[in-house]
Length: 151
Image 1 (tube, one colour):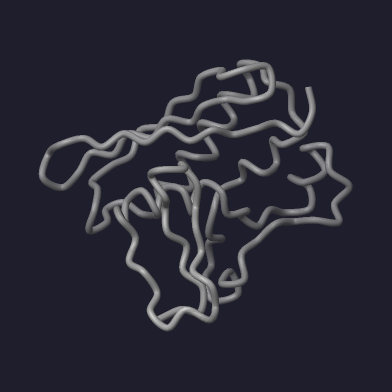
Image 2 (cartoon, rainbow, N blue to C red):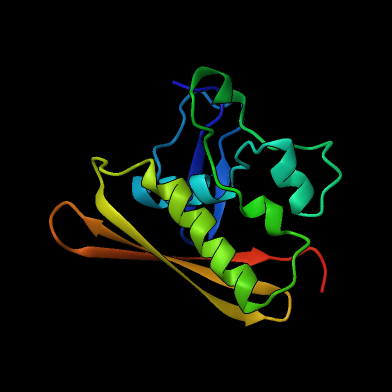
């Protein structure tokens, strides 16, 4: 059992964490929703060159605390796009980043494959749509909003 557990909240479309004082950590409503949300919005570690190419100063390279235990960084590189413009080339990069992050979980006990698409939601946000092909042959679709820091 971990000290902090992120559960996807379908009512608010956000991730909730259980307080450290909670004796019983709640199980997520849908573990696949939680997996998708957590993977997309956890900052994957990047090389200095990649951070500089994204227009960052290189002082922040992302990463998850558990990265020290694994060869591949957990999470996605979506965070590199925070300062990007909401244009088609950025959407394609977001799709590639999300796809790469989710591929490390294929196959899982939940899904055989993931397909990612993006669409413009507003001037400052895009939708990231993840469709999972479940092990029973059915599909599950989840839409998450990614907001840009600037216009």
